[in-house]
Length: 95
Image (cartoon, rainbow, N blue to C red):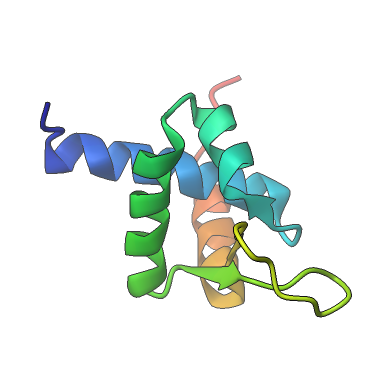
């Protein structure tokens, strides 16, 4: 089953929204997948795509500097976070 590019973009927006809310704390791939209710492998491909666009960063080491063997954490880049924050202030709240 093929997912359209439009739907992939919408799911990527959900990922960015989740990482924005967690900023500056990184999230594991499994946490992102659980939050947006998608398969981990599919989410990982989207995360790698966002990394290639330099929107998010991949963290391969834990807080002690030891490299993960099979896990990866993800974090929104600082510049992207600032732009996202500025844009969210421009959107009027309908509540």
